Image 1 (cartoon, rainbow over the protein chains, first blue to last red):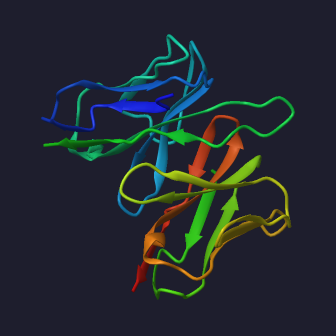
Image 2: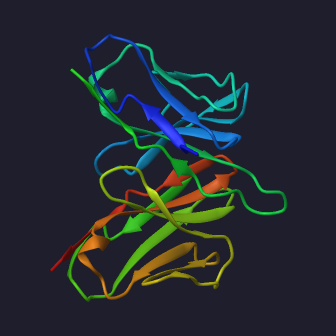
Length: 116
Length: 110
């Protein structure tokens, strides 16, 4: 199993450009999430999904869109990049276990995005 | 609004010291508390705690949860330079979401 795979690893965008950060997992996990990490602020939840076709907003959703057409993929779209979106982005997945607490979140290796 | 506060935010110790990292939380719904270690890249999982008073242990690391006082601690004994990292505490209020604290930057000097 590859686990959670994010692409690209690094990206530089100009203000106003759009792009999609890719996230794929091969563990058949129903839960997937996107976080951004800024210095001194821990990880903040952008959007999350509890299954294919179901998404919801997290703490900092503005400027980002997501979709979940398959269990495996959860892309994050930046509609019009701004310097404030310069950050490290992590995708994570987890799954539920009947009668027990859900598993821990498994993280991808991150995408370092710079918007100039 | 859910909130997780970690302390201290940074800590510098010498090899062999014992450290205690703190995590307090306020959430509308609690399911579990998780600790992660982050070096250069992705956070790696350490512990998940769901019940008060039950210590989880892995080698030199241990953690415990107090659901009455709403906090958790992570202990690292006989620290090594390889323990240098950011330690993240997160609370899970629902099955798919995690609320993270700011993290504690631990530096272990030889």
